[in-house]
Length: 179
Image (cartoon, rainbow, N blue to C red; front, top):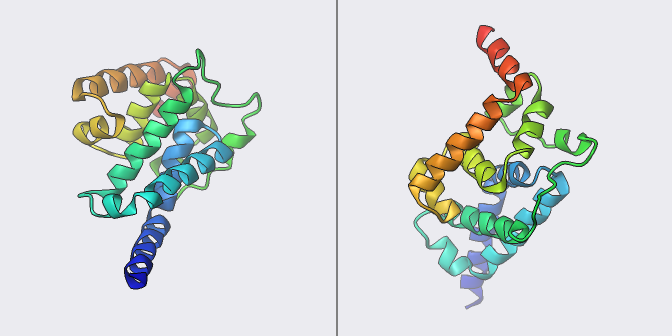
């Protein structure tokens, strides 16, 4: 009995160590604040640990945990009329440590991009983050968000359109394409 629990704990620990940077990046992009992202990931992992027998045996444990995280984030903000994502100063937005291969880290003005992302409504932000930053398919994104593929397409398209309408981002994308 103790050996199985120890093996399960080691499996969970290995999962956390391997997935922490990606879960933190997703949580940061959803919340816009380092401390809120840490809280979101930690509370998500608490839930995952309690149910690790079921989570660990799932076809894709990372997708399962991501879904738990998105649901937790949505529950927290469901009743708010307006979500305030970034503080008045955006010092909290530059504290994220990008992992290797993070395309956002290559942007000339990461702060402007994150500030623009913070302006999107929660569902559009979730769709954009999961589709384009996490590089999930539309089906995987729909599963993570608990909605239809059509809703993912709609929210992602609206979110990208709003981001493209921001003059500073359009200029940044144009300059980035010339390099």
